[in-house]
Image (cartoon, rainbow, N blue to C red):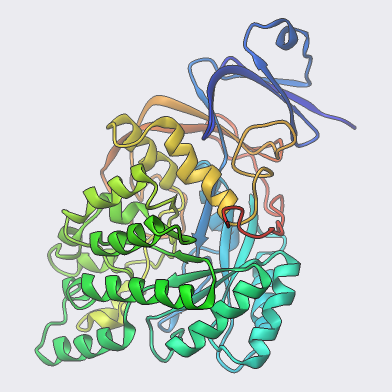
Length: 467
């Protein structure tokens, strides 16, 4: 049976427009928009009407960088696909793109099938996958073409983590050449891991074992150098490049210079780099371990360069790199040796609210908020216009957002499966009220009414920004 839902009276905000409009949803998709109070809107009938007066009606967020259940450093990320996608929904995100991992010595297919099995039937909202290449060889390069056909159209490589995920320049070049051939997008963790390992060894030998030293050894210049090198390798290969979790002003400069040359180079940052800093890593005792992630948090002065990059479009996307490890029993593995602290922060539930706080503070506009959190990640990774906008034919992934509500972020109230909040005690203005995923209500006036298994795998086309 056909079902119709009508959202009345809200301010519809997309990356392109703001308009007081009613939204008609039919069978999980957006059927039509019409000006509130117009004759067309007045004629619509529905099985259910949602009053959005005084609220924003925005597309569901697209978080293009999450790590649910990621094995790392002898443990695994504490959010499962079930808990993580539920938390995403609470935060107004209705699509995640997670990372399937190829293990060294194994095929891409084996890694991908493992992640399919982890997610299948578990997710509260829709999901896709990128593929991490840990072992670049003739077999895995040959598999990339099939992955693109299957809707896995982006591949992540690491210049960091020697002995785990690391690829040298030759392997990176080969993967980029393959992406240039098959239309895939290479995502790069740009840090000089070989040099960082030397600095880690030297720091530990000096007895510098506290969490703050994690940030000190992973130097800004080694992020900038790797970003520059990745750009040049992409130029040689004739391939597009997407640099993940950009944290430093010098790395933004490398991206800006490449983009000024007209290159297909893109950059992502994350809320932790916009709102947190090395001050958090230096918190007394072992508290700083909560903030250990890579790339690391930077001195506060880098934040303004990141905000500027988002305003000038030298950075295009804000994702979370959500990779939570509990403080007790997981982060504590690194007591006495910062290099053993699992790298990652929780954040999938906080992204939309933190970015709305930036709107409140005048750092970005409402439309830019939706652009960097919904529309651009959907376009970057081949999901637009099915995801990332409110337009006829799009999936009815819609958030009713109260721009005036205030909330205090806390582990006491969040829904991520982790025992601390990276933003504990921070008060923000704006809160998700109701969330629809493909027309089905997941959050109803701050009550979870969704179901495990509603979320489905979404195959993606290729990047929609390429020249």
